[in-house]
Image (cartoon, rainbow, N blue to C red):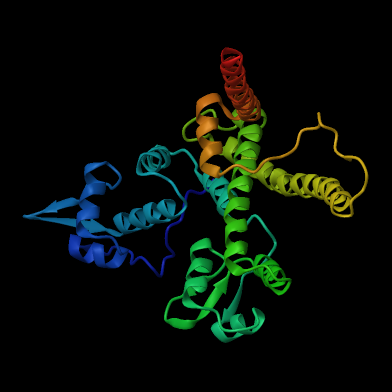
Length: 322
């Protein structure tokens, strides 16, 4: 199994030698970074020639490997483990294949581009800089380097939803606030799905650090199989919930007699992502709902008692006046 390839033969000159300044220029790293990598054992020891250190193409290739893994979200400690395994002769093709599978796109949707004029036309008028900046902050738009009036649209579907909501009369700040709230809830769902699949599926593949090459390759194959399941499950559950709540809202607004909702039926309540994360850290992800329910019931009971206590005190005052 071949190992990670950081550069093609045309990018690294066979037999080339570099001073540390030249190596920094060729790799894009700083001299200080290169020395830090050496101190951490991430780079092979350079050849000492007189009073200077001489670096070769292997050092340049290694720097590019490190940069690539950092871009994929690896820490320097985990990169060191991977590179040590590679240097010891263990194949990393499966590991890097797993990294590529997880790091790759999780949707078939393709990004698009839009100009400022097209953006304003779609939203029915000039968009102020604050609204555009908020869209960039949320990731709905991404700035294109060197193009002041052009943006990358990572998810054209998400932008289309915003356009339709705005056309229906929803203000842009309300759309942004809704997206922030929704994103926190969806991130919680994604986190739970990953915990669930890791516990029941991927734990057996990831027992070694780094994983064995064959295990990593099998895990990458499993990611491809399971990747659509999260979205399919959310789509089905969202459709069910929308039908239930849309029917309930329609009954309410049309003045239908009787409450169509079962008082014992659980009703979803949106919580800020920070609150959900704090509760999860306190009681664990499986107990979030039970904790919130118990805390709410206790608060309701406490307020009920507080409301009753003054009434009792007033009744005593009246008795004393008599």
